Image (cartoon, each protein chain N blue to C red):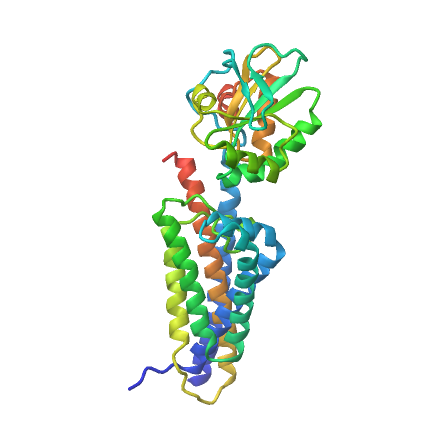
Length: 201
Length: 178
């Protein structure tokens, strides 16, 4: 009798272990599925100048006192990537190196401009801490309102003629690159691209 | 009658909790910068003290893991450390800052704060408190070895599955659009 119970107990432990391993593997697979089905491109939010409209004109000194103008045709024929960030947004910090490397790689084609609002002092410290001196950094509530920025980091991309080509909430390198992809393909957003291709993936 | 534990239960709990703290410390040591960023995200410690706090917490986790394996005081240390983490999570939930990373098991297991996380920690604190009860000595038989090893294995797998579910929850919400 005792022998039978011992065998049964050992067998049950093995079964429980196997089931726990299966549950864990299933949960992991669900995680991978979520990653795959989530929108891979920047999420476009309503509000602000629409794709195809002109970017609002803006002129002011940036946080380091350099004259900065936004909107209208670019004299050097470059596109402009306006990236709204904030020193208090954790995702922004992870996105900064990505934006910098992208801007350095595409320097001839793209002009990167950072934008934010709030106290200028905090932003100057932020610029020095993350070595953003090479790019204009505009602190202006007016600019954020003009683009109706709700969630950060938010990016707006317009072409050399000052026409908005892509915009949206950007959380990763893929999102940021999807904006350029959208401009090159002439699609407003990944959502529009999915809708156009019949929503089937 | 004083509440006393069977030594098998006590050993399984101690082993499981030691494994938990060792794995947590290992993930933090692998990417100290990420843990520093996550800890900074809690906004409870001044920026210039972050470096020291990171080392102190990782050291505390390692010491707790070692203490759990070697002495009876490890369980109280584990309960204290878990309670401290839970208080930090609750403080930020109260401030409405749930989007920050928990920093629990490394940057790969990105997990925002939630009341599910608090519940998970409360369960772990309860286990640590049970584990702190004195154990009645008795003679070991070979089945006890199987019970301890299997219980630790099942505990680790279920804990990992709960963590994965907690990390999935916000993705599901995002997908549902609520």
